[in-house]
Length: 489
Image (cartoon, rainbow, N blue to C red):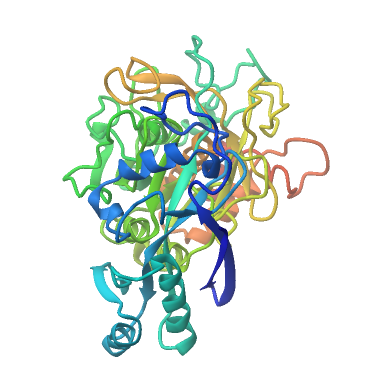
């Protein structure tokens, strides 16, 4: 049976409908013994076996958000295929609570502290014998917020993200997103990297953080760039990915690969890697809001990151993540602010959270023909399209991107690189790299100025006047023009 959970985000009451993992009619599994990994385009609520498989593969730190993970009690928000969904937990995030308020929460609702994060974040758990732990967490969070003595309080969510699969395997040795020769596509439908590199390839003093499912920091094309790394999933000493989790390594390569034939747009900058998620061997991965917010804070504060690249998103808003991004923008870089770059999403729908937050750079994907990537664009990939609408800032190449791959046979390919990386996930690090180039020549700029430069110098694409549009934002990023403009400020 479906139920509605109410909670507060940014001072407004939010409502999220959830239901049992197996409440919807289930897709017939090929084998009851092995349901297989989640695939892009699936409706999670109709693939209960896959969702439970993905949940049970998570580390103890994630499973501890529930008294027990079971088919009978686990809830999920029903969404369309390909969308990010949320799984409410039996824990509550509290921001800025004093000891007296935590004592009240324990006395009135039986909440106990199970994790203390940085910057005043605390995670509380409902009693293990609660009849409905998810509902109890939502009720306690509302009560805490409505008392007015905390900065924020809401249920802690897990996010189940679906990513579009890679392009069809084919030989591709051109980094068209950096320099498009028109075969295929349109000459110049790129980020103008060759021209930008006549000014700078990036300064090692500038750090770009990749928050993802881990980065192969020992990769031959990435290792020299690594300056800091941390695992917020398993607590390992490095941010190395698990199994075939190749997504973060591909993102990092777009920024700073130093390979002889596969170069990042800003291959002279430094890399900070934060592992925030774990995959299931398919197109799905889960991350925890509380730990993700801690990773964001670590990146700007301890990792000294100048730019934060986030190729993830979707689901309901949550103050713990919103507040962490705000701190990065306001307090990073000794008060000048870290630039926050976020993917728009791949569901060919409205820009998803957190991409719809103000004062960040939200990135959509363009193709080789300078079109917005859609299910009917000329690239022929009909299984995904770039999100659009309010919050979209710029576009960047995001189809069949040649970049780094995890070492060994479990990545997108069997080589050290892959030619098939896709999605706004691949467009986002390209824009993050462009921001890093701007800061390489003008490290004194505030983050708001960097964002304005990148938007103002984007090349207009698509029909209509050369202005912001809901489908392509300000246009496709042009790193060369951004650098020319920044140097003149």
